[in-house]
Image (cartoon, rainbow, N blue to C red; front, side, top):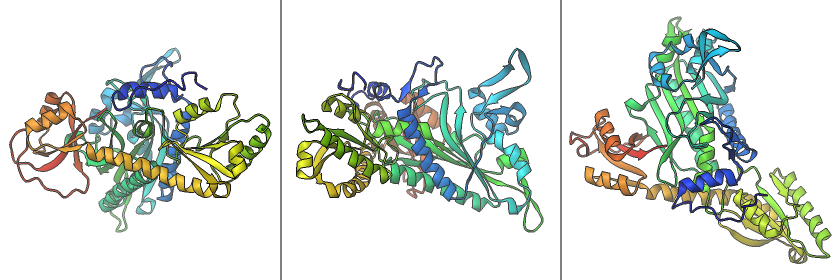
Length: 484
């Protein structure tokens, strides 16, 4: 166990950056000593959180008719250059490969920043008829972008883990419905299984994915009142199918271009969100679905009773293991208090404490990490209690974070009000806006980095006045925030 397990962490609300830097190392999540900026080592504790998150999304994609695939990590330069807007959007972030062994390559290759230009040349071979549609494929992989902003482990790096789904449909309406399906999958996992609240934004025209007709993004609020984009879905229309000649013969015999969508889920960013949103000044707090260890059993020793105590601990261990829980019996020689600190730091949702008095009274002492609350239950009620806690802990975490988000959405009626909120409070700022990129640039310049994140998807609220920046008639209601 970590020697500093009992040393207090920095205050998360007062100094989130220091808290985060401490927790990712103290909870053995990442190691920063790899020696290449923006590339970190993912240790088992966070890699398991990511594995469970991958599983939630992959199961949902499979259930909705997607199939998994794997494409090479390198992309030929001639593939990359086929879609003009895409090149413009990513050229400054590309890692180039120009040598192999002792030789210069005849043509450079690039590490995938995203996989449209890797996958779509092959889609042109695979899609011939309307009978081949829809084509719905995804891959779980890493992508590489030469991030020029400051890097932060899991939040912003030059290598990150995600899932990307790339679909081809027969009609534009089918593609629109696919985007809605992508949203439904993300809402279900984030809200219903991870307790993560978000704002689902339609990005402004100047901030769309390169080559997309419409871009939609899930923005989450961090404790320092900055936001992070953790998933996106894009309506591509025919932009890429025309560039890569993805055509099919329709029912009536006419040749048509495929209607495309793409869907990106930031797995490492979601891990950062779970850590940052739910954690407290004692360490991680993990939802059951993704916790590497869901239940820890800690024996409370008593001279002359230890054999009986261990028998009872092992009995519960096997019962819980047989029920499918990720459970461990802590048989280390550390004192119980040190064990408590350690497993609280790592965010194990439920701790069971079993000592001689518990056995004598036919009870188990249960500790729930989210509330730091200890109570006793009858032995025959333990499984039922765990089933209840699995859902109740998630509900508690979600309620806390929804309250945080709601309290940090503020409306500004004029520019002075807006600048004051940006300077002193942060979070999301709701304003009436002209939809002019020039005003968005003024906002960014005058606030030190706040950006127009977009309109809430599905929100029918209409502006009633003028843009608070230029005074022209407002066209929409948008949300402004400072992003990682």
